[in-house]
Length: 256
Image (cartoon, rainbow, N blue to C red; front, side):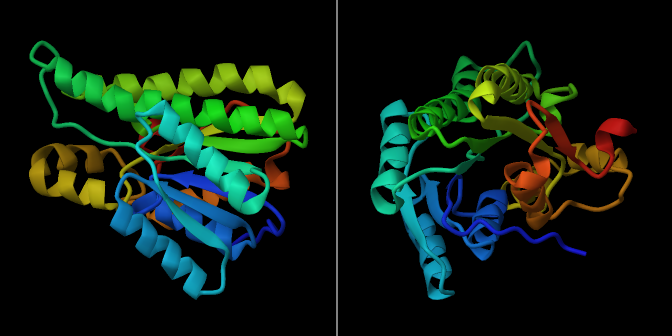
């Protein structure tokens, strides 16, 4: 049975919404009745995604946003409020991968870039989402996208895993601070999910990905809609007592 939620009269913001888990989550929010603000650095793709939702009868807009720029993150929240009057839920999903590297040979450029998007970007989005939710005074729910790489370590992925471990620390600390204000903050930790980013990894790092898949007991790639389902649950009243968790969606990887 697939759970259903009623998010009518609520507004959701999704970053990295033009494809993959972000797009799947934006669709799921829209199908549950929410107005959705899709944010992504890819202008053409995010506009196309928003148009797909509006053509299906949903309320949605696409916003160009580079989450590494705090001003753009703030402007995206402002645009959501200007368009729909409020902000109730957010999935901070925008993220990137960098090529695997020996930890002794990692470039500062790669380290800074992956952390700018994966950690600073979530910090900036969450900061301005919290400001709006705090001002509204009616609570809210935020889900940040970490990774199984936020829970474990893997060879040649120190920079990426540093960013994803950081997301969990950011989530837990903010969750403790804002739970008394009725704003719940949690994280999801996807495993190997069938997304465009993973497709690139499978093609360019086939041997490494084969080793990772051996440790995924469920024996298959995850689906973007499976992560979307976890995000919606965390944002829903069904998870009203869930605060500060880092929820694995990894087919059993972190338990094996």
